[in-house]
Image (cartoon, rainbow, N blue to C red):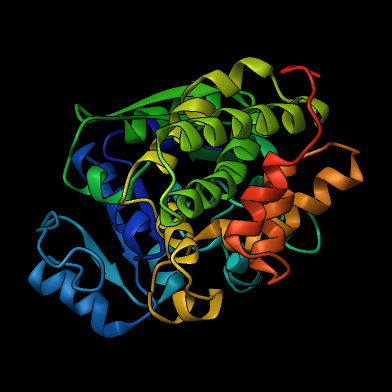
Length: 340
């Protein structure tokens, strides 16, 4: 792998996906001085980005850097790329990787936060398996990454995780800016599990808010949610300290606290009485926790780890419980020590 090529300025970066997070991250790597190509599935959106410097689907009021080039051909986007950033939803990542030819020396970066349905694999594992990519070429970017705030260049910090410290440091140099502070981490398991599971906890927090519950309830869900994330992560080999950092607590707080969070918003709408189908049909944004709650529940069951909040959210998404019944079920559990 050409770590030196990725570390140079400018690096050639392909961002595969022009949704809100892909577009915001493309702006970050442009600001870091790189040569950036953004792949948009629709040619008309690529034209808007190229000629009007605006993503009208997600950020109609924000001007994108004139240096950002958009294309609708995925192979053209990745041609001679030093870094390929995957910004497609977690459950469609495998299908896309099967169709794409990623340059053999490129660092491959996952922005998706999810656990694949059926396989129970984390996103870096999907990249390795479906893309035939060596793990030491793979990076996961995670943390408190609310796309709108990052696109507005509000100060933010995130984690660049890879099993290879050299790869993590190389990509850190590609995306570190005065407004986007990147920290390296080698605990890919912990970083990815935290990023996936916090989406489900945010759904629960949103349901509590939609039901009209207050700060005591939401703080309790966030705190017990962190306990569940840590419990699963440690059993799967993660470093427990990861969960008190940006990828763990930082991402959990941002996702559960902000109205900009897709998962919290989805949960709020459920709490107000709308159905999963109604909410899904009304937005182009993907709330990753809606799909991942089932795969995380299966992963936990496989390893005999108890995740009551995640399990109950999955039951609501499956139509087996209402949000109010979920709250009752969680509050009716037997009393026990805080750590058990």
